[in-house]
Image (cartoon, rainbow, N blue to C red):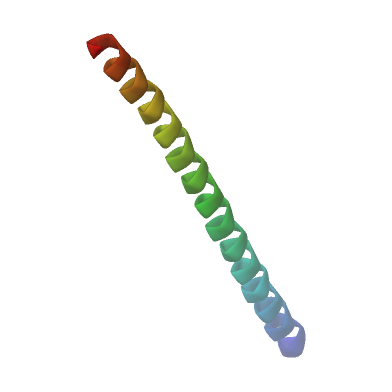
Length: 54
């Protein structure tokens, strides 16, 4: 019984590590998309402002 309990705890720890790695990867991907969208929108707004001043 103790061996089974220890095996389950080890398995649960490994699952938690895997989930954490997936979460970090997902967060990085979302951050990259957010930065890209912000740069594109900023570029559009800058261009529109520059054209309106000309």
